[in-house]
Amino acid sequence: MAGFIYIHVPKCGGSSFGAALRLRFLTSQATIRLGQGDPTLTGEAHILSDYAARRRELHAHVTRGVRMISGHVQYDPELHLTTAQNYGFLTLLRDPVDRFVSHYNYLQRKHPDDGRSNTLDAFIETPGARRLGSQYLFYFAGENQRPTQNTGALVSKAIRALSRFDLVGDLSEPHTCRAVLRDIIGGPLPLWHRNRAPQRALVSRGLRRKLEEVCTPDLEIFESVRHHKAAA
Image 1 (cartoon, helix red, strand yellow):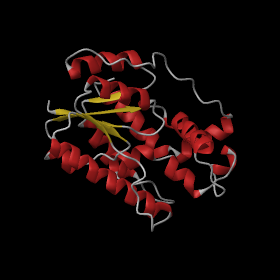
Image 2 (tube, rainbow, N blue to C red):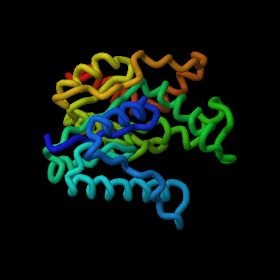
Image 3 (cartoon, rainbow, N blue to C red):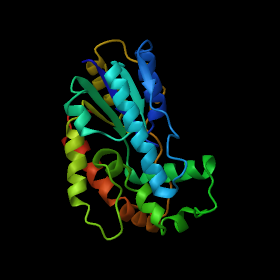
Image 4 (cartoon, helix red, strand yellow):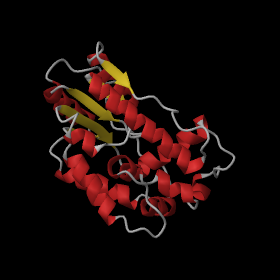
């Protein structure tokens, strides 16, 4: 393979994984930069402009032949079928409800916002919850879910995208992921510090039901790929 592209979905345990892969390809590696959004835009428009800039940077790294590229960047099927057709594509996923809770807590710690509800119970009732609950849809099908939207076609699109990946790792099975990765990269394994399954988020049964409803598209994607993908 010419190289590898690691799609890092937020809060899927991928920071140490990505760092280890970059160490494995130390002389030819890059991380997609964050914070490239148009400063004249706000809200979702600003976020989308940021991801568009990240996509352009990904294309530039592939064109230059960088061997290991990682980052919070959406999957680009056109790139995969053309310039990056000889690259291996990698990602890690985790239970979407646990990922949601981890992502919310991270935002509260690192990016406090007066406009964001300060409890998970309150946040789950806001429009922002559906965006946070459909990150797999956003990263692998290109869109977040919308209220009253039928997401079936987007879920299928994301599942098809992930079927093209060389590794779709499950964070709860790090040893399996490591074994598959060893075969893919064809050389010494990077040192990956996460060596046990993450603890499940502790939420009440009632709140978990609400979280599962908000995360429905991502749950469908996660369950499909973990049962039908041969990788980790």
